[in-house]
Length: 95
Image (cartoon, rainbow, N blue to C red; front, side):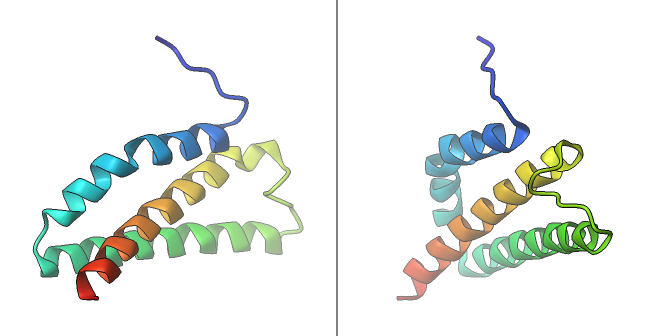
């Protein structure tokens, strides 16, 4: 079954929401060290994509409304969501 989305960003957000339950279960099964590594790696990816986003803005483009950057927008949302999930699982474990 094909699912259609108006934007790549919308597709990425749906992907993040649809996989979160499985992601949380996988993260919860990791050792403390591996969970920390996952959180750190996801943060690094999100930071990298955020840097790309900011560099585009420095050129005078507005990636939030420019369709040329729709893929980056979606990927950035997905990376942020993945990091937030890992950080949340890590925080719950540490408390």
